[in-house]
Image (cartoon, rainbow, N blue to C red; front, side, top):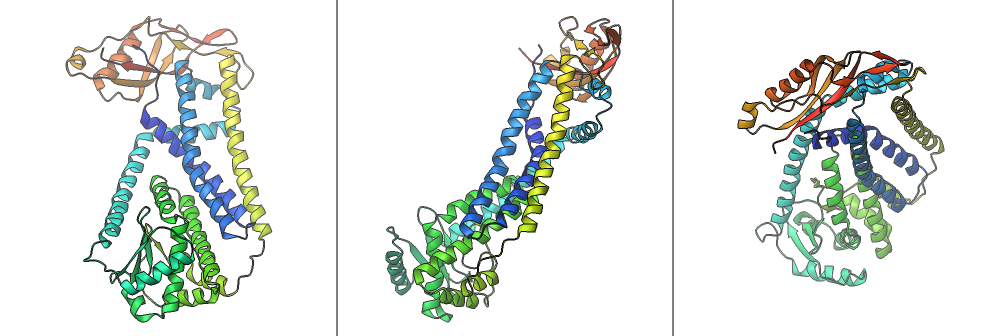
Length: 439
């Protein structure tokens, strides 16, 4: 039985390969737009959209490419022969060469990507477990005077639900955790060593995170980082999101306090304390601390960086245009091949293998062992329509099944329609696949 399908590993591998240039273009656009944006809310929105697009666009393109590959494999196109015929398209040949090189190692690429995700997932889970353990009485305790102060601040910023506050000796910066049951943690060193009004300023910063549901957004951000860990542009956009998020929280806190310098002084005091940062928790020391302090003390608007922004935009458009041009040339060549015209203008038709005339028999040993799978191979079809050579491009996983297909093709005699060039039969390579399926 013949079936035309693309394995899930191929879909994932091709999606990862396409994401390399797609995410790079998205990042260039985000950096270019950032130079024109003055408010942190606008920069935050741009990079959030860019980060989400980095996950969605490659996924959609991977599905589209997989569907296109299914159609092309169903037509049994002479892919390799077509490339040799289109000798004048140098850019398309180079692109096709690297594409083919990467596609030959799709399994390895997907395996490395999967291992990376597993390692990061273990690290993230350990962080979540640590955060959850802090809620226990052995790790933190409730300070009633500070809890009453927090309740007063909640009414001031118009937060209607209760938020618990605990004092924890194992941290050194205020941290906010939780989505449905927010919890603010204060380090013991701050409660005992920092003036009350400065601690309140830091609490207002944390309440700004709670009001904006930044903890939930940060969790989604961490998941995207985990899935796209291999791309440095993702980490760049994620860092910009965290910087902008802290600046937004600073603005909301200073507006509620009506004293920006008070929050700046609190951050300066906090800078004197050694701290550790956990990406799953919103902490007051996030982002570039000194730039945040300067921004609060001297809230000057940034100058437009027109030259760098225009350079980034032009680079992104050039990158996108080059890839579109290469893809267009490749698609144009494919369309010409399907129409029967080569890139050099010669009329030709592709060879087609007819498995109905040459159906391999299921090896008895494979039947007994319940072996099944898809064999992908390249076959040299001679001018007389017989198979001259065959080589395995991707094994089914069982040598008996692979050899059965090649042996049958080589022994069938005339079992294919040969390729023609200007009406004359010629020898050419064609790619075929055969699916062994147990009924």
